[in-house]
Amino acid sequence: MEILGFDRLNTAQLADAARILRDALAPMTNSFGGTGVAEAEAASFLGNPERAAYAAIENGKVLGWIGLVFTYDHGWEIHPLAVDPKFQRRGIGTALIHEMERLARAAKVCTLYAGSDDEMAGTNVSGRDLFADIAKYIADLDVTNGHPLVFYRKLGFVVVGLMPDVNGPGKPDIILAKRVS
Ligand SMILES: CC(C)(COP(=O)(O)OP(=O)(O)OC[C@H]1O[C@@H](n2cnc3c(N)ncnc32)[C@H](O)[C@@H]1OP(=O)(O)O)[C@@H](O)C(=O)NCCC(=O)NCCS
Image 1: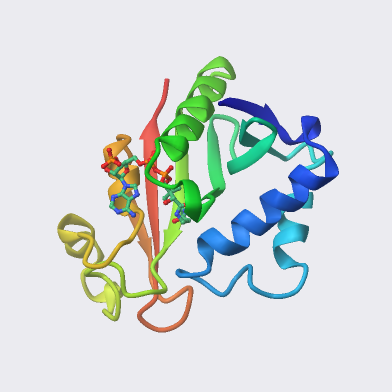
Image 2: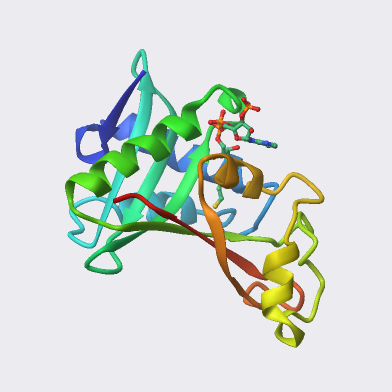
């Protein structure tokens, strides 16, 4: 498997990246389900100095991809991250994160972070009034139903925040971060 920047992908591979985004996120959010939405998201990483994306490729086939948004001088956001459902749990997501960590260190970036929405009641902060005691909800946060928090924690990310109700009442965004250099 190799990891290539989007500028090195052909049209068919870029179309596949958009499909993977739609398919991988479908169980968790409607955000990329609309016609052309996933395609527009993938295209937003091309020729954009504020963003970059990388695909995991094997025998010419896209298995998954990851985006970076250069939000701070020393902090980059991971957005989005999607592995083709047919190829999940084979270390592809891990390889993509590790490559972003390498790029971040090379650019003297200190922190990588990601927002991981809970729209599917996948954690114990779903359906809660988080403003009531946000620090306690962060301290006690755990997965109840297949949320990718498990994946991020395994890779050393920690929960640094909760953004209450941003996907609708009781549907927060979970903010995870990792020191990389
Ligand atoms: C989350 C995602 C990127 C992980 O990619 P992946 O290639 O399947 O992950 P890896 O194989 O590298 O998994 C590494 C470890 O993370 C954990 N993990 C990954 N997916 C998991 C799941 N669905 N449930 C529980 N643990 C999981 C496991 O500990 C796994 O190690 P193991 O297989 O040895 O037990 C992928 O499942 C995906 O695209 N999901 C849908 C989209 C998504 O959630 N994106 C992130 C939103 S911010």
